[in-house]
Image 1 (tube, rainbow, N blue to C red):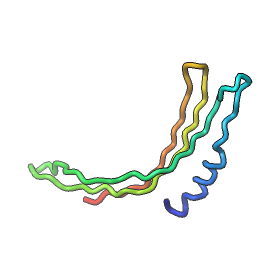
Image 2 (image 1 turned 135 degrees about the horizontal axis):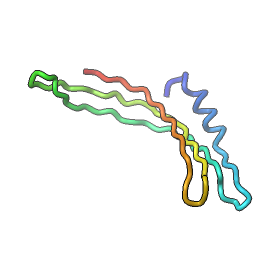
Image 3 (image 1 turned 90 degrees about the vertical axis):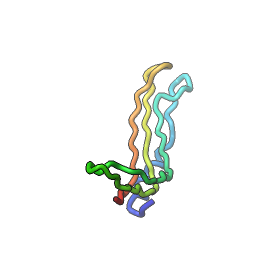
Length: 89
């Protein structure tokens, strides 16, 4: 993870608590996550009957998942996810 993203990750981890409703079920939850996504290589058609090789770089990723429970059977969810990646052709 790049140094410029550490403040975002620290704030996300600081907000990991959940608020409990009167019946001890959570009504709202915040779930931060960090990870590593791998890249790969694949072939694409160049339009002239040939193919080109494309490489995807791998890098760290992070995000924040916000959930608001409407009732026992449904909830609203907002997901923010970030990964820096590069493509080499």
